[in-house]
Structure formats: C-alpha cells, structure tokens
Image (cartoon, rainbow, N blue to C red; front, side):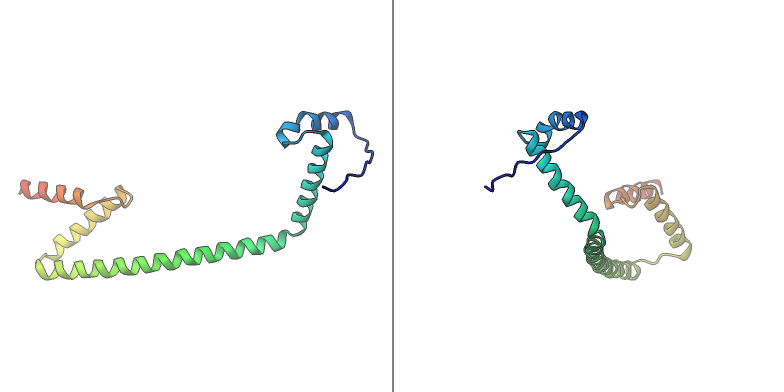
Length: 137
C-alpha cells in the first residue's frame, strides 16, 4: 500500500457533514477515505464526459450490430414460415373446392380474429369454431 501524503483542505461545515453522514453509503470508514473515493469518482466522471463521443460511437456500433443480427434471424424465420404456409395453402387448395365468396368471407373473418386476439389465435380455438359451425349447419 502506498503511503499517503498529509494535506490540509478547507471545507464548509455542511460539506463535512455530508461526508460524515454518507460514510456507510460510500462503504468507507473515514472522512478521508470518503473524500478520496469522491475525487476518484469525479475524475472518472470528467474523463467520461471528455470521451463521450468515443463512447457514443462504440455503443452505436454495438447496437447496430445487435439490431442487424436480430433482423437477419427474423428474416430467416419469416422465410421458413412463409414456405410452410405456402405448402399448407397448396395442399388445402388441391384438396378442397372453395368458391371465391366463401374464401373472401373467410379472409375477412380471419383478419378480424387476428386483430381481436393481437395475433394469439391458436389451432384449438379455430377447431372449436369450425366444429360449432358444422353443428349449426
């Protein structure tokens, strides 16, 4: 441990009280330690203020790369989902003959369902609706 150099400082009584009242909060045992930590913190703060442009560029670069990575992942997932949806639509289209009017009404109903459930519609709910529709016929 380096030896400390004794120095005198002049402070207003309220500043000394602030130091003494916050020793526990600063996790130090003496007023001297408190002042030492405060000076280190303030110098660090000043250096950070001086280097703000460097930090901003670094943070911006990290955020941009993170967003790009997320965008790439979402694009891949959307592509896979679209392929599966296209396959399902082709199978259904080949299996059933549905007239244009029924298809248009179904599209309107599906848009309404998705909007009202904020996209959380699930197969079980659709099956309940379809089976109740068959029972009504």
